[in-house]
Image 1 (spheres, rainbow, N blue to C red):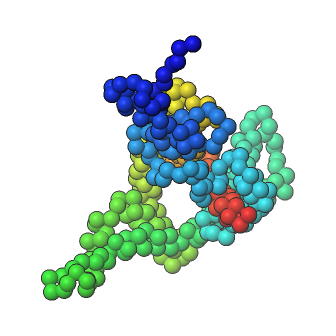
Image 2: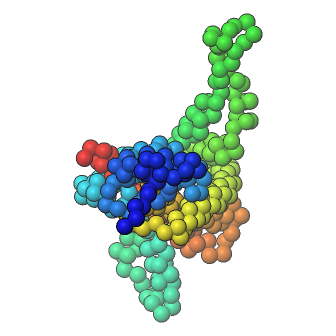
Length: 373
């Protein structure tokens, strides 16, 4: 039997096979390492080093290449289906969320608004049934008249209470404007280490403030003037003019909010399309559930977060639409179907805004409880 020479044997082959000989002689199966640029680790039960995917270029996440999964941050702790979230949901009750809401004036305002417009809906149906020819009765019982009178008084009381709760809301936009008033600068007589603080003129800061902040400031001030008129501190004519001016500011602020909402939804839709494209590219490349890279898992979390954010933007758009219809009846003094339209749009706006505020307080409570687990 003839002897077969292999490249690894000494003295075999010519000089042209030297690189091959060196390659095979330096190969060690125990020291084999996967290419770190590969997006798909080998489908073996052995734990492999995973890195961020380079198939689609630079990642939108600032993660370092580590052998283990990236650490979970505070936002990922609220991911649906996690054990921490399930335990936190068992500890956080609905009563706790409502209690946190009632600790703020904004939460009490939403609760009073729901009660106010629910009573207005009842009174609207009661009036429509009372004036119907089929159900009209020659005389109304005294208790029914007294109940209707008390409910009307209750609705007016809730409306006045909500106005008092929103007093001095102009402090928030004023604080934001004053924060931009002081800026550091280096004068000619001082060095860079010794800088001074100069105060811009307040009028200059107000003129260069963002329009939504200015609208909020002016509207809140006009609302306070209207409320002081209801309290008797100012004249009735002054209060009516302030209320009219506040309605115009509310209309403009609602239109600005709708424009900003549309821009934000377009940006989120574009980001969601990019993430979906990356997930599709990964799925077409043959990645399985076991070989899925960490970047794909992050993309799944990202698309879930974007979908949730887009959902609440849709809720905000619906709320702003209801506010636009409501304030349009006051600004343009539309009389046709004024009472039913304002009643139902006010109730819908209250439900949507209360749902947003409830979710915000619930998320903060879940985050606090999950951190303590």
